Image (cartoon, rainbow, N blue to C red):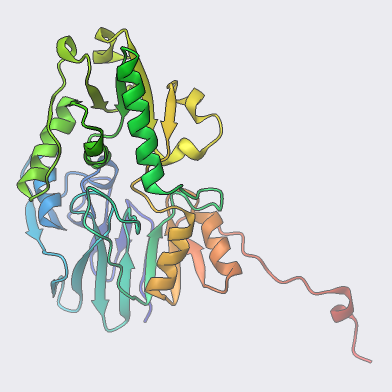
Length: 336
């Protein structure tokens, strides 16, 4: 019997009675990581220890938590077992592998195969069924070498400080801010973190991560510092006190043409905590699934790419326009 996989409130596995990354409150959900678009107020959850701690900070409240170390297999139901594997996305992010007599199922959540500076290295296991996120699932999304992007960010910061401006790096508070903070270590520049990123970085330190010196953002003393903060949604906000500033967006979407104008920044840098197109293909090679379900981003397009390469693949919860072979005019003629 095959796995029954449904795109309902995240991903619903009726055979197990659990959701994967439900985005609305559910009775039982396995949570891949602590980003807000992958969590909700569930009654019962399974997750890694860092994810549980981050959730207590970001979404306090009562819930039953089952904290599972990476690599340990434990029973989820009477006939289904569960193993968490590092996903390489942010601290504690997990690939979720389910084991049953019908076979193994692997759900990636958000992931990154490339080694990062603020997440456990990704270790995808082989599985029969693969549910994978495909945020950057088009061939044009190929990230440049990370070392070069980091060098460009450091140059931007140094030149801004030398010109008397405050370099402001827009990064999401969880994951990207910690990645960029560690990347800035060779620059030797003092760094200020937005309050949310400051508190979350302290949690990283509780799990043994080390960072260059930093302090919480204080606009009155920001001169000469690099400021790391979330992208503004309604104007400059706290940054209005920094009239002499140069801003940069740190995002994989920086590869899109015109992104510097869309983000209204002085610069954009393509540093991402997601897999790019080559890494998406590489994951399928590593997992060697019998069937792939794609979710998020360019799910339909990437599923079509896999089918063209001989892999059975469907975009979960999307209309899949399957490529059917068209018989040639010669093949349509009656036999002689």
